[in-house]
Length: 489
Image 1 (tube, rainbow, N blue to C red):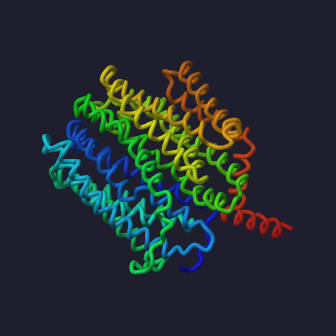
Image 2: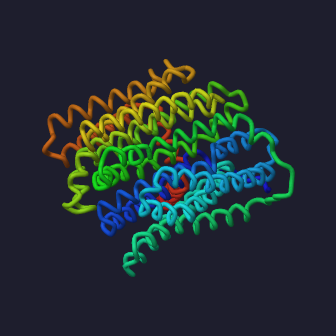
Image 3: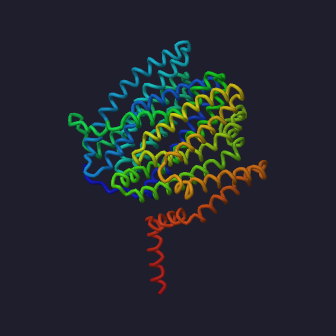
């Protein structure tokens, strides 16, 4: 492979931001169309099937993508051999996933043929597509060229919307619509694999990079638990609530779940650099970069929470209509997840990039076990509102666990996690108390406070200024101004 020039972290964030914002908006549009087309019963069934499919999709990776980043960031790493080995293992995992996934599906849902058919139509193209997409995004994340990751995501989202609209236009039955949903991922996965082949030579007959198997079990279990958490709700609630109630929960949960991809933008840009710092024993640089990651991700999470917390009823009515208004209270509660998850992702990546994946796995295992108990008991007692609060409690447990295990915990908590979390909690409670009925004013005030926080924090404001000054648009503006000044003289 030719030596590529890496993008800066800021440039990668920008590439991932606009692509993820666009793809998240399109994915949300597709889910809105599905909610209208399928109605609450079938949408609840689709949500249960989708949760199962996303977990199956993870098993085709089993934590390998993070190991590829770890191995590829080492000095003198042969990226071609690493990627070729990665694809071989993914092929084996894909086969195993379908075999065991379908056996488990029959064991758990043999009495519900409609749900079984939905899962089959959705899983075959989608799980394959997710595996192919992940190969592409992992490679471009490794070489720190995030514009290609963004391209794969945007193509996937555009195809998803087009296929769903086609299904609605021709009044296809729900099973075929589910197939089209999954087929969108498959097509974009093929495009991602094509882009990889254009940038690197893949030799599937070459030697195998054994470093991919080092600590694989820890990464696999930890990654699985991380994937299960967002889909735990529909899987557990199916046992305590009706499909219609699961549909309301799913509509409210899908919005923060889709927007969760935006904090992953920042994490995706920072992770390869964090791995590089640790592998080269630059521990102080790693710590400072992790603190910056926590701050920036928490700001992004807060910015997303604010409108959905105060204007949940308006948003649900506009997007889904009056018949889904019951989901607005759930959306208000679940919007807080966007901020909590942003903190947790940054802390978790701090552990992973320090070769402390086992500690991350322990925390996530506790969170999943707690989640099953909380979702089951709280939904059984308080219905879907209790389920929404269970989601918040799970993220709080996860946050405490990561803070306990992460090195330099006091410095991280004092400089980033503590002040930012305190600011978010106090500002949310105060504004909600005094301006509960004035949603637009509440949103405006909270954003003003957020901007004030950015200005006060010299590190964050300094990074923003440095990025603006280094951008080509600013440089062009300075050249133009200098030329105008010379002409004036």
